[in-house]
Length: 354
Image (cartoon, rainbow, N blue to C red; front, side, top):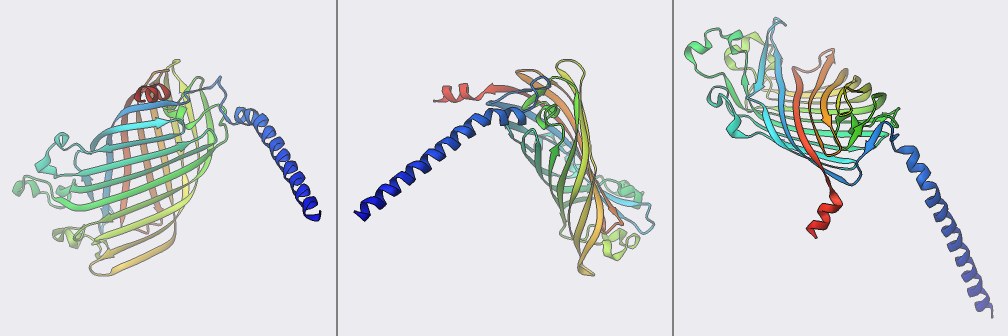
């Protein structure tokens, strides 16, 4: 008898729990439209393209240099990659996006004079109205000394080519995440003209964080032996690793020139804490930490955006400052990006595939 009463009590208790859970589920379903309406952008400012697959062709030109400061603090060795054009494709679906570009060998100009350069760049993005996130990985191998005549004015009298360094490689990784304060009127996707379309001019302040990692290495000293006397001994390095992270604050604004043509300008300055190490044949490994610097990202986009097609040009630059300078190398990063693409109905394509 007692066992039956216990079983009946447990049954009633389980029914009560199921009923409570069902009521909670109903309340969640009823409140979900309100929550979505509150987090999604205002349809008067931003048009959404849900469940659309975006396919684009991408071409980039990278502006990068590696500089090593001389004893006089006026002259620098300046290494550059050869003809940094690369091409690839981009895919976007709702909040996710990825683009991949590679160096095409047959487009390399002055191959014999400036040497061979391999370039790989991958960008990933996950962006919601409130949160803007992107990460970029770049690999470059093969540089030439652009200003060789600064240190040897007669270089091309005896040589046809620049001083080539196919052994120098550079790996960069940059990640940034921002919170948008005006997410109802402008989104990351609409500011670039890809997954969403800006219908009215708008801007927003952003607050976030970013991480930057830069690695340089070479088989021998980056300072050629013929010029070693013009540089401090601790600059004859074969490796450098720089890691920095910090907070960024910025502003982005999209101006509608016509219903389909737009201009977007953005600036994200930040203060970063830095750690670094470098290796030279003379001093070995030297660690440096506790310094502060700045990483500022700037972007300008001009483009065309309609319900089916989108195209544009993006100029993006990452400026890195050290104060005081705690590394023996300085680097500059910028790239010019051309893109053209079309939106496809993903469900239609999926149905045709089936």
